[in-house]
Image (cartoon, rainbow, N blue to C red; front, side):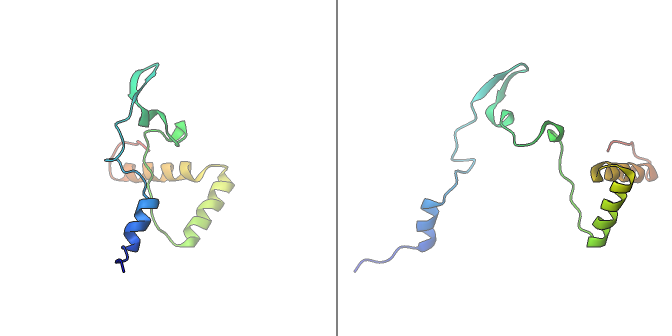
Amino acid sequence: MSKKGNLATALNQFDRRPSVEDSAPAAPVATKEGMVPDRQVKSNRPPSRQGKKALTAYFEPEVLKQLKLLAAAEDKTIQSLLGEAINELFKKYGRPHIA
């Protein structure tokens, strides 16, 4: 009788996603700006989010509810309200407004 293989090893062979090390370098793609790596051209992010980073924080559900109500009442987005609040925080600490 042969020895059974490891189940995890067998599953990894079928459900293995290529890692960065396994993939070939991105082929350059010609654009108006010149040659850029393929990974930079194929982006799932909309142009308005290109070059930006997400900022996450955890609060009580009531905070989000109140923020949504304020955004609706002021006819603004939550993102614009948060940018306004961050700029006020920077102002308080003598930093430039950049949000």
